[in-house]
Length: 310
Length: 320
Image (cartoon, rainbow over all chains, first blue to last red; front, side, top):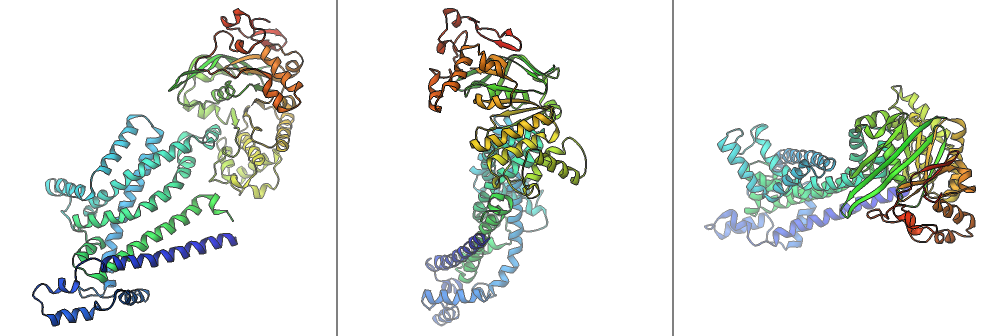
């Protein structure tokens, strides 16, 4: 028990250290990029006095380490600063935008995990049949198409030509379908191959033969014994894939005019709106770190060999 | 005396990238109901494949060329996968595998895996299933059954896992159990404990066991009859007594004497010159003739049939 406690203490400490590192990177990456936010906000004809006012207000004159200390101490207190572009608290902007992003990423994950796992199982139990080849083909197909182009293609066919869905924006469920598919299909392709390989490996194990020898139906053997065992390594696969889901959603939000964090992020980068970009980068990075922690926790739930150790 | 299992002229091959492997080449085997029947031979001689054929768990690249596997008068080779699953596996024929470390599902506890088997045969309450499971585990001499039920396979020793396997496979009260080298992966001291479980079962039930092994000494403890396999054929079947006292086939003779004479395990390994032939291009005629002292030119041309030379004693050799 003590050993297990120590493991989790270490694991959580590591998560915190990662979070601090991530905040540093999120901060530096922006400040080391050329471009002066004050100039961008004010435009080319601003007076020097106005320029100095803006620089002072957002503490842009301070040395970078001092700026970081100001920022991070604010973050710890829950103050993410004020947007230079919108002149509103960053926390407020994020609060308005986080919902749509979570809905989009959640839908994309549901699409990718359910389809990926399903096609992986199907390809494994029907291996070397046309069905298996089809699963490979579609995976390579989705992986070969850049998401922004696929998004535009969907919009053109289903929005512009067939008029089944709105052309961008967030108007009800129909406008969610294609953004979610654009991200989800690509990740589905990413999950289906390893799922097939895991299933094939598990189906060759003695405990599968033993389960059949008991007289269980093949479908029962596959769904209960093989799937549960094959899913264990998939948890890591899925957690490791999350950054791509986030990255994909940033691009796709812009293509589909989805009013989430992704489009806010892109616009803020273009405007050198430091506080907003820093906050969103930090938030997404923490999301990834937490997902990895979650994967470790989930592991111990699904795999008794980990659960009971120590 | 009735035969529960009769295998006639079973020929089976595997299509591989290297060519067709003639794994079984006319296997004849009869197993008496309620008896423990040993099936012995070197690695790769087709013992396990014979067992897998009976329970219908052959790999998909296996091809049955001819023959019959009659189980209680029903030719198992004619069954569909569905019929096998519904009528035979677990219910009539069960199987215990060589490696207890890998034959239990690592992510379910013992209770789950045992009840899963028990409830296939009858619809009842969970309390009743659990009661049956406890009785089964007691039958195989497992201690601390109440705590055992909540344990996962990795928390048990190899010997315990193998006994759980037996108990699980007996859960549906099958008529026949195929034990495929169940003690090979166990320590010698644990082997004895495991064999005692089988001996107890023999006394208290009418279970038929096909005991597959490469260790003749194990068979003397538990079996009535022994069939000796060599390179995909049964070369001799006899009572355990006759195998030791009147081994007839030259291969059986060497097998028995390798054990009786041996001072150490090393001697056993050196006893029979040559190795089991590769079955992609097996020797013609009697497959043992290249390693046989008594071989004559006829042996490389004619496949010797299994013929009776005494009561319950048959041998496949042209020189007998």
